[in-house]
Length: 206
View 1 (cartoon, rainbow, N blue to C red):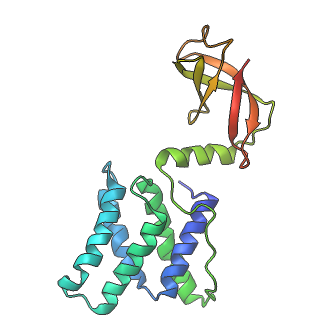
View 2 (view 1 turned 180 degrees about the vertical axis):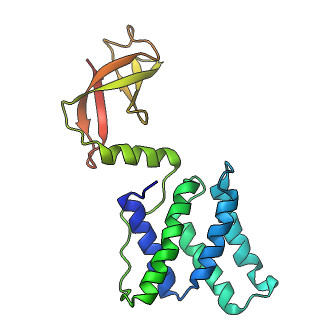
View 3 (view 1 turned 60 degrees about the vertical axis):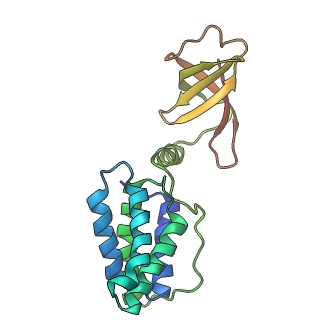
């Protein structure tokens, strides 16, 4: 699994932030090890974020040095900035794996860590959003293109929900076609409009 451009930006931003705050890279290794042990759980991400909060809350009671407590706090604040409970756990694991490598790079290579570049994608997506992003990056859509779509639902008011390339879902008004289409049917649709980022905004059945 490779990272998207936006995810690379997040990895660099986290690494730069933690290096600037003089966080011990070994502590990042420890939280990575914990995430690996729960990666197959359905609620892995929310467990992971709760674990980070617990480390900060219990850090002083466990008797860690003030420095270690500070490391935990820096890691928790930075991670909660980029990862949300619905973020994809596998993607977080990939990003943090690179964060630990990048931190060593920024520390050892003496790379000047100036102003941290704010990532264009500020939050790691859910697994579904990540899939859609991959499809979007691998396809270049143009208005007028004809592509295959699966009819997943016929809604009231002549509205039809299409699934394109297995991940993109769009609901469109189809007054002429809704009555003859069936759920599960594969049809050709024409791209009517694109969003600013190049993804599909609307389609029409042809």
